[in-house]
Image (cartoon, rainbow over all chains, first blue to last red; front, top):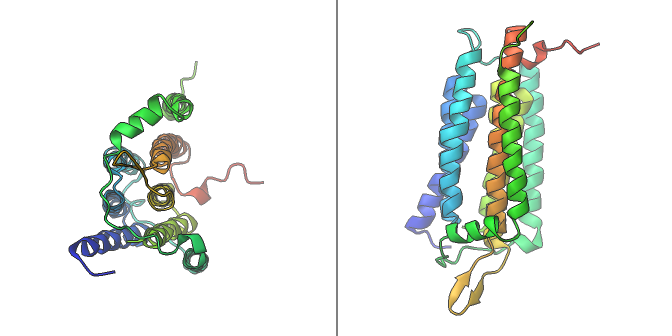
Length: 172
Length: 110
């Protein structure tokens, strides 16, 4: 694979994503961790762009960065007093968790490197058509209509449930 | 950029998420770990849908199978619902216990 500007940018996005994800799990201050998570989510959106998944990249930015991250920051501000902002980690757990995670990573990378059907599938630079129109057709009139309706109901249930759980209890 | 590049990136994200869930002692940090795991999962779906299913060409136009991307969109929706319910539960726990450290919430422990 020749080293072009495209691959350079791809590796840049990959590096940003992984480095900021590493910051999410190691930084002691929870607000800093939330902002590192924002960078990770943007990095993943960039990788979606490289996969030519334009709608998915836009959804990632709108829903994750605009929605879930704001929700997480609200959660931090409503529950963390001055003392809780710093995350406490125990040494034994750090070693055990790090060992398990590293072993898992080794396993996954071995599987990825050795599965025959996954080798030599490179991006040959074909420009694909935009996906938004096709996604609309698949969701609203073809095979994903039923899952779409089920997910809508699930969102409604989650909305009502979240409002019910988080409100103050009224005693009579 | 090959399929394996994307798979390695997403497995690193997945492992970091697992690491956060295992070691962090703050419910919101655990939620961040779960978000990393879900992101790695969605990235996998998108990458497989791009590279594993061959492109078809009908009447000079390239047609791509994007089922994987739609599953990833559903994944994002589920992550949003999960985050909302998770934070509602955290708020309720904070009101009850005055803390969101998961090891202090042990009323059901025998």
